Amino acid sequence: MGIRVGLLGCGHVGSAVARMVRDHAEEVSIRAGTKVEIARVAVRNLSKERDVDLPPDVFTHEPHEVVRDPDIDVVVEVIGGIEPARSLILEALGQRKPVVTANKELLSTLGRELFEAAEKEGVDLLYEASVGGGIPLVRPLKQGLAGERIVKLMGIVNGTTNYVLTRMAEDALSLQDAVAEAQALGYAERDPTADIEGFDAAAKAAILAMIAFDTQVVAGDVYREGIAGISAQDIQYAKQLGYVVKLLAIAETQDGDVSVRVHPAMVPADHPLATVRHSFNAVVVEGQRVGSVMLYGRGAGGDPTATSVVGDLVEAVHNLREGTASHAPVTYQPRRIKPIDEIFSQYYILLSVDDRPGVLAAIAAAFADHQVSIKSVWQEGHGEEAQLVMITHRAGERELQACVHALRSLDPVRSVASVLRVEAEER
Ligand SMILES: NC(=O)c1ccc[n+]([C@@H]2O[C@H](COP(=O)([O-])OP(=O)(O)OC[C@H]3O[C@@H](n4cnc5c(N)ncnc54)[C@H](OP(=O)(O)O)[C@@H]3O)[C@@H](O)[C@H]2O)c1
Image 1 (cartoon, rainbow, N blue to C red):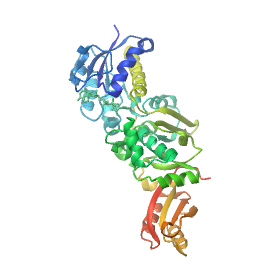
Image 2: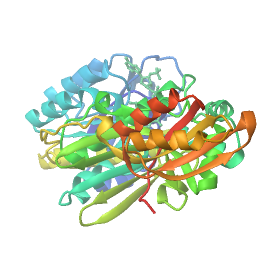
Image 3: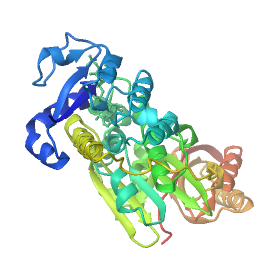
Image 4: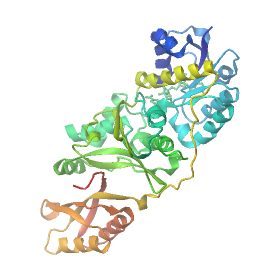
């Protein structure tokens, strides 16, 4: 008789899921082992026109009705946000119905409650689409690398900011113009704050860290800086120095502790992540034995994201028929989340300074006082325009911040225009 799916939400992702299940019906049914049908769809506005070929009577504005319908076997949640998504997922799991979700916001805040509910009921809660849109990331991390010890993940997980930074670097657009263009192209929301300030990337970083390090990481644990402060000058100096500026999500483990952060950083122009342009995403996974693995592709958009949702759906249907659930959702090892001031990095610092003898010596002394060693320094401009462009050797974040604080109160330093981390092996 086949499996009947309740689709909660029919927006960008939901409508693409409905189209994919119809257009790829044969492949889906062969791989799932039975016919899969979108039997009911919950939306907010019943009179909205939708690009899906489904009879009008499958639509309802009562999502709980869909979850409770005894004829619905599997639930796909693509509404987004915390509520009602959370209650709907908990209710579906409570009825032992497998759930597929794309909801990074929910999983990165209240994921543990949901995973524990899934585990208790012995049903699937699958979430491939919550990170990296169409890029398979969750399954490779959880299954392909199940025997490996992951030491670090570093990636570009937000397409909007990557588009903006690419246009700034390659076509000299200002940040404002590049954001406006991203909005016009549909990459950025009308309110781009979640992307530009790094909230979206932080949610994804939390989910990736949770999987990679088997521990509880929520979005609030992620140190976060967005790209609003990146100037054309930073991008230009990065280029001169052989780097590219990217918004990075980084999760790493050291001595059992975990550090998770999202911030702009300079990466060497020959690093694989430097070649990830426009709205594309990529994550480099470093394992103890496998070395580096890079996963690259379209991190957002209805159709790419639907491939991840439908992939999960096929797995959920397959498991449901076998009377099993995929794998323990997450095991929560107790691990300390390292605060940002315990990390080590190289840094790029741009200073506006007085153009007179002795200035460099005073600045160098401030660096030495804080145990931050300068790798290179050069002066750009003269007189009122004088700037020092500096790169440090690897230093502690705490020491670096204390050094920057000292520089701000130093007489010949007119301003600390920028401080950016440099993610590179020291060369
Ligand atoms: N878009 C992407 O590229 C992308 C990529 C990866 C993950 N995701 C995740 O996928 C999820 C969906 O994103 P989206 O872009 O498809 O969002 P969207 O276009 O805004 O669609 C949301 C859908 O949910 C429906 N909805 C909202 N509140 C509802 C309620 N209370 N009851 C019933 N239906 C309700 C809306 O109904 P109406 O249509 O009637 O308004 C709409 O169909 C989010 O968790 C998002 O983070 C999206």
